[in-house]
Length: 138
Image (cartoon, rainbow, N blue to C red; front, side, top):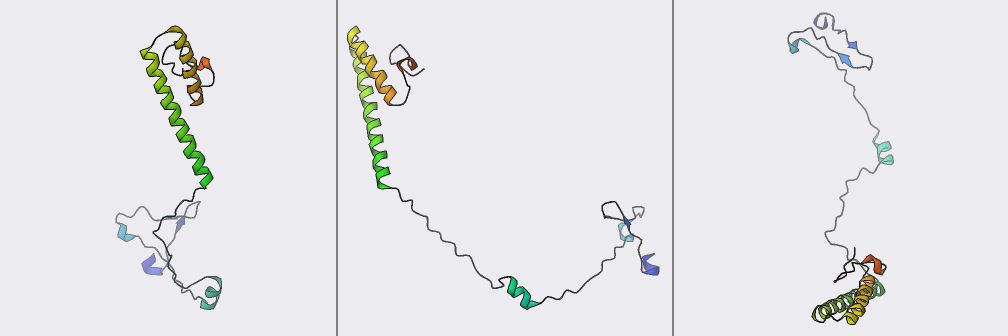
């Protein structure tokens, strides 16, 4: 029909999609008519609404340096030093308990070791730790 009358009967589905004639045995027998339009643009209006100049984005490869508050840095360094000191004291006490197993000293050292472990944040009360040496957190 397209070749003889310059018309093609389009079948549209419920969604507006064009259904081509599926009975054709060769795809070359199907034709679609597309109308072409020439658009004219008002360059002044486009220039008023949009920036039409080509610009490049300036990307810097330099990394930003993080500025840390000196008081915060000092507090952090102090906490790290105290933590290391507590760990060293704990290690020394563990070595003493292993070398001298006297009962009175063992109880005093147990209390001190548990106190140090609490300060290190490994527990909150004495019941949070094992009753056996080296009194690890439960």
